[in-house]
Length: 362
Image (cartoon, rainbow, N blue to C red; front, top):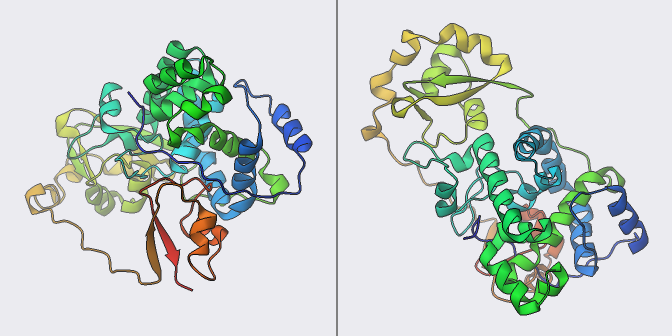
């Protein structure tokens, strides 16, 4: 069973860079990764695409990494796993906790529904723990641990996180080998680029300064405190009584998909930025839970959000089998592959059939 849904598909876009293979290989060795790092032209392309072709996207990822990576490391360390696995969510979601794939995979670690339930993540009308940074990281660590126990190799376990251990076992049987590049042709198409993308992301984050990539500070708190909530509580109640901005509560509690902490179902954890801890402690009590409760917690009156106005500044292209950014760009005069990548906030040139790309109108 796959641990996630749709994945990136490698394309044949060739990229150039002034660095020699010798320099890149030396830098990869200096990273001293516990997980073996295979290298060839495909890996080189991904390294360049992550580190050189999308500096704005990587700058944003670096800023988010300062907040999320310690959470990933803690979960991986809890199960004795290599900390280098913390780079997988860069490939999965570009560190967007609200990311949703065309196949319905959600969160930083991109869990599909069945696998999320298998690893104990709660999904209800109020809450989706695939979006909970701490709980989804713990589940991902357990998923990776199980794949490694079954396959006995971390590169193969990474492949299995993308396409499931069954597909990896089939590729091993067909290739008569357990080496990644030997089984590469027998893996699902969308999985072949997964390990190279992982290496590209890991390399770009480690050597970002050599490429002039500057972290973009993320609007996330340096530290948070946790509170156990045992009654239903709306973010607007907290905002109106304690003063904490609703968007701030959403940023650190993305799992509460309707702005309601469902404490009536059992104790729930609410994260509050430390700068607001004192205000929440002073506000917590009967006054907080009763404030406009009949209005804000009446889910029968909940209406769907208004449809956003249509943006006519771009057209949509649906990716077909065999497409790559370079060939798509040739269909639109004045639009480059790099422009499409930047416009869609892609962290690599990997695209998959069915993906919808926004093509800017020139």
